[in-house]
Length: 494
Picture (cartoon, rainbow, N blue to C red):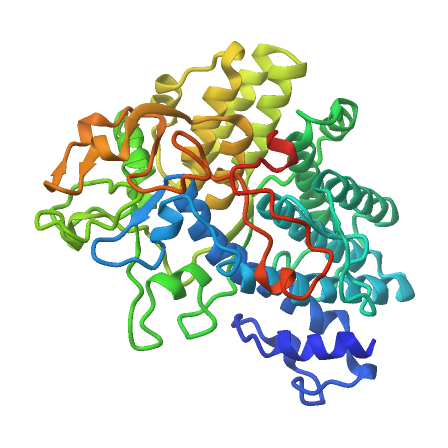
């Protein structure tokens, strides 16, 4: 327990959330003793550490890799992401946050919950642990798992992504077998007024996502069928909401990174990509106005991946469109729309076309409802259901739906479904850096395009497939494998 206490001190000092009732303990929370460490103290810190990286770093990275975002004129903070690159250094702090703060503290909660037979809290901690491992596998392909939390082992082995997925799915099944719907759960931000019933639904949604994601490489049809037959999924989007305030360290993480002036300046990097803008504009998708602000001329324009327009005289910063983000925006984990898309895919592959189409329609309608706008019929008409080409239609619609809430998952699903596909146009066709010529008509709606400058190891007409192993792990772990290269798919996208 001594090792856990050191980590607990670090996470309690994070100060990301305005919902700080869990800090109301008799002893200084920055120097807790072994006797007063509780799940109520650790759980909110676990949640906020996930939110800090998943809702900011991975939202930004996913947005650039999924061509929702491009780099703002005259700046270069994320130009490497825009060019489909990732270094071992760039993701290191996020890797450390997930492993040293989230996973170790979640495991501490699980151990305490077993001792007290607090199965509601045990499930909640297991769900967040599984969700974190899903993220790590989807980023890196392989990470330490079976030996990861052995504090005496400074060089834990890296496990294959498939084995990690199977391991955490088994952990979820074990936790679900122990818990009852009305079992209480310790202090948490995700379902603060709820009991284990809401966490059971979230666990089922996570299982559905992971099983569908691995279904092209592992036969999990029966497991998915059993889960669908149970029909106990969230009926509302799962997100951290109503726990942010307009203060430094307490606001939505992406807002704080890109829009807040708490620290004396504003980061202005992320703008709308032409791939998303032109695709949504083709049928006047009303969600565009809820996801992005118009430019200074009250128009929607899309910038191009692989450049920051640093040489242009015509396309200044006020020409581009910024995401619509507020300090109190939710940090999304999984939406009703995503669940319906997975159900549509299952029915297309194993069920009936009629059922698949019904879930497909429900998915698009749920996305419009979450955005608070009408117009789902036009989106469905633009990309009508086609059971023979389910990956294409689901892929494009899911890519659009996730552009305003969960960009990282859009990158994951684009890698898996191979949709949107790459068109014939390239970034150079759309924008010529030499003569400052911008031709939006060169882009073909519903496609990706090769960035103007891109990672040649990934190659033209291809998405970046994974991160290199994090420097913060590789520099200390003698068992770190040789990097497979950013063009090598993770196991579920092979």
